[in-house]
Length: 69
Image 1: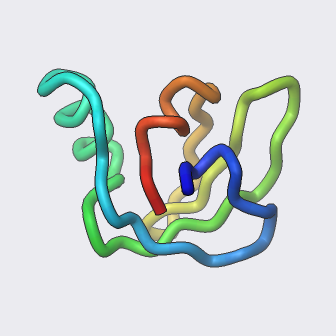
Image 2 (image 1 turned 135 degrees about the horizontal axis):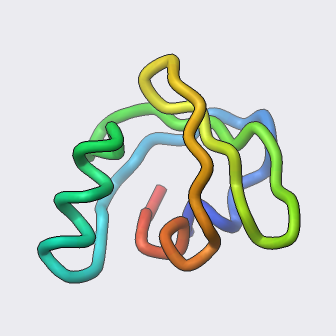
């Protein structure tokens, strides 16, 4: 399932990141790497606030759809 489908407050682990090379590199720089635990803090109007590596990051739904958990 994609990260955008994950329930708030539930810890998931990243299995794969899809998309073009520059998109994958951008997400990796933010801390979204395979095997890393992520928690969806909240969702508002399609935008998600994610906790990854003890940091809160806001991403839109299209980016969250590229992250498979």
